Length: 102
Image 1 (cartoon, rainbow, N blue to C red):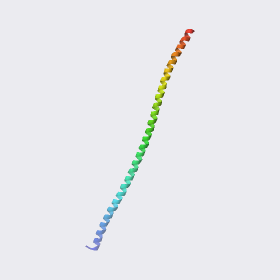
Image 2 (image 1 turned 120 degrees about the vertical axis):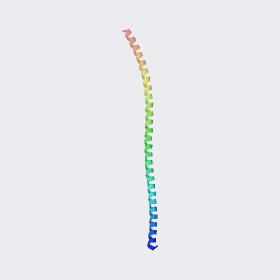
Image 3 (image 1 turned 90 degrees about the vertical axis):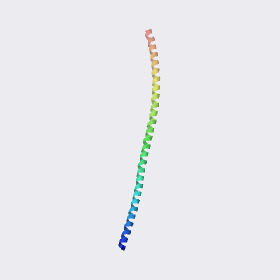
């Protein structure tokens, strides 16, 4: 073989090896970038889910307070209704006595 043929073969093999090395390097870099982007997206999603969860927890606390207030108002209303019923009975008795005296 001539020197030019040997040089061409060596350059071809060297070029192929460089192409493989550069291709692997680019794949590795892109793979790392993809992992970073995926991690950022997952982190953002988890953060948003955390905000939603804390919002739901706040709503639950407010709902529990509202339920307690409703029970309190219902209890007071029952007491007021009973008191009004007794007051009406007393008023009816008083009116009954005053009507008899007239």
